Length: 483
Image (cartoon, rainbow, N blue to C red):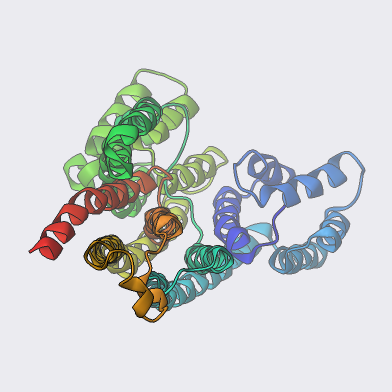
């Protein structure tokens, strides 16, 4: 089990809210733990160990919690388990303890989430400065070849430094970005996401093969453009799916709270309460709720109906809140109280993600023009150096022809009058372009979060921009120098 506080706190707040929901009906402690360990939370492993120690080894629950706490590496889990043991020893009701702990964990998670956003915003500015600095170092190294040749050892050291600095920037954004799971992955999922995944597995291998093939005839620029175009369909569909998830996140609290209140007011089942809801006020959830209501009316098992609903929506927030709501009611909890607990959790999560979008979107979209400018500058400088090298070679040949081979002997032996080998320079530039392309594809995704396929959108843009610069900038630079 990971001891990373970010990973622990994300699942722990969901875990405690779920336990508070199922405990609101007053079931036995064994039942609460039995239902909890069936959930897909990373923190469930601790409660599973407690349950096994109590049921199979015969330990008292307070003793079992203490034993598991001693083995827990995460400090958050250690203190929680010890508090749980103390509450059991003192006879404090589980429902009250779990409700208070859920509130505490939620407040701590919100504070940590916003601190991570502040840190990520500042490191986003630093990342842009790092990329500009690396590109300037590469450009200065390229310009020095106009005076003298670059040693191979220096080029290798420069490449390693470039990789380290760029990788450090990507890693920092990855680590400082708040950890959360946004997309629910089960079976096929939403049609848009399913189609994006299928296109990725089909088009990307074809794009790589075609890119390599046409790269032999038209150069690296054609390879990058073809690979970028093969990523575009999956990236666009993933972007559309991510926007829909943002809308569904905002509608989830309203749906859960309304369903709980209507169920409590009518004293009826969830299926009856769904028929009384004004589904037009549910926003983007309306078509999914209609299908859920149809399945429940058809006497299909409720757990299968809810699972199909979660799979169609494809939202992890909906998955967790509906588990809290449905399981809490199934164990005798009051629908309005269970709905309020789950809706409060969903509201906090939706607000945090909305604030993350506001903070991360400017950084993500700033990376695109920055990448275009930096890659275009490096390609332009490379073409200028190649043209300068060609002019020197022509001047040397002309002087030798005019002086009968003796004119050069009268000139001082300066390195600037010699033709330099641009092979290593071209390799350095290409490695810099590829590293920037990969880094600027992953960094915006880490900042904005969401499904891994979101990387395809930024990867498509950076690949096409790099390929465009490799194809268009050289003839433009050659035309300017020729004029």
